Length: 207
Image (tube, rainbow, N blue to C red; front, side, top):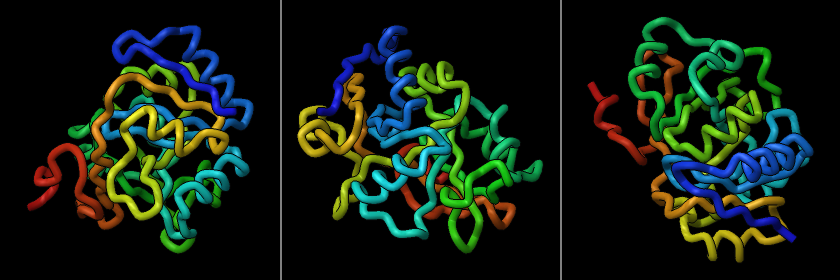
């Protein structure tokens, strides 16, 4: 049965954060809050958890997965980015934006887009997510909790638990989360191109 943690959104309980991170490190799949709805997350190196995410969301091989980072100091380890792109990313971080960048050799190939060799990178503005990342000490492999056929993320804790009970190892609830997914920005051409309009201000990236 799926475990359920109820965390304070502003002061998440350290004991529960530690337990959640232990589940991630053990290969577990979790649901956790971000600044753009709830997300599915697992350890970056865990293939079985990644396969579970693909099954739950019915994702094809072309899906861009995202590494959710605690800050931009981790960016250089997982993506190649020029100075101009870095400035754009820095000006919108933390926030509800996912930036598509060329993956570095540190990113497992199964997480990269099979043809473009890209990876999504983002830093959330959410205290529970940041507490998890700080305790884990590395990015969480993540994707928005959008069920097949839907366009918005799940945000109701009862609906999340009922739909994902026995499919994930842990559901973390920390109050209401917006059901709008991130705005996805492709930086592969050296300038921002909007791939998906979502939370935040997509207009900030339009010339």
